[in-house]
Length: 143
Image (tube, rainbow, N blue to C red; front, side, top):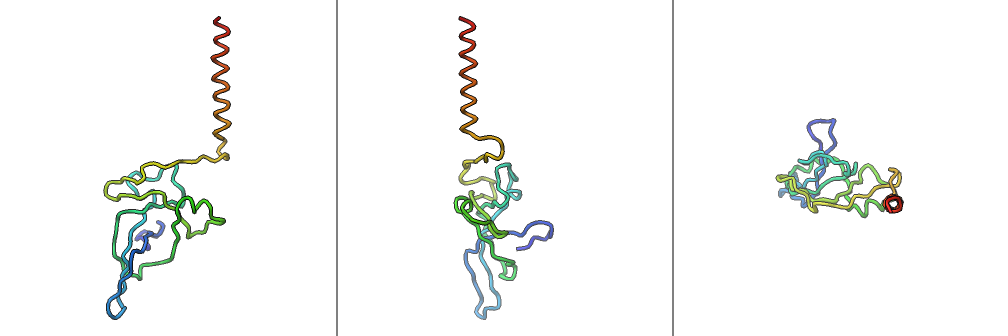
């Protein structure tokens, strides 16, 4: 569904049910809105994915004419297993309370790629090696 500002991305919603009048001329969709990180109270954070959305507690009814396209919102696990991510693929890790700004769950694991120059097992190996060496060396010098 298109926002009034054309420079912003389209709004996204999960269709809960479709309802039509007796003649089928007035079709309504009852939706549950997805929020993008920048639309949340806390805003976009460093760990949010570029294709991440939050399933909100915000329900609404809209004319079926406002639907622009179909998108697929995956769980984070299934999203990471996609062979190719298309323009219409998104993922959701959180449910979002639009009035309080609270998330459920209130935390998730954040993974760091080796491409960032930080590989945890190697980091901890060197950290403990230097930590042990530093204290061992001080003990030898003092005694």
